[in-house]
Amino acid sequence: MKTTRYFEEQVLRKRPYIRREWCEKALREPVRREVQPDGRVRYWIFIPELGRYLRAVTLEDGVTVHNAFPDRDFRR
Image (cartoon, rainbow, N blue to C red):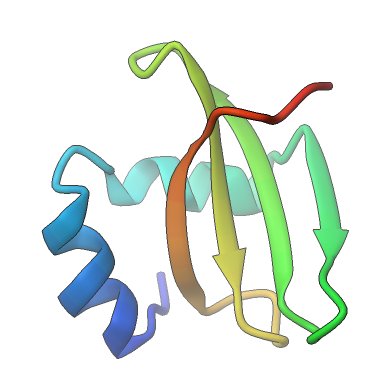
């Protein structure tokens, strides 16, 4: 999985419970995918271990993970 320096140094440090496998699965099997106005792409997947949806955000290429976090407000 390709990631940005921000993801490696900031996201994983602030949210050490986030697993890379979850991000990979979000990109492969999202329940929803949405392109942001700036071109970045959002992917959502339900993570039973978290009991909520994880939002993974990639750069414009749709492959390089830039951010990931539990999304409290996501509704299917």
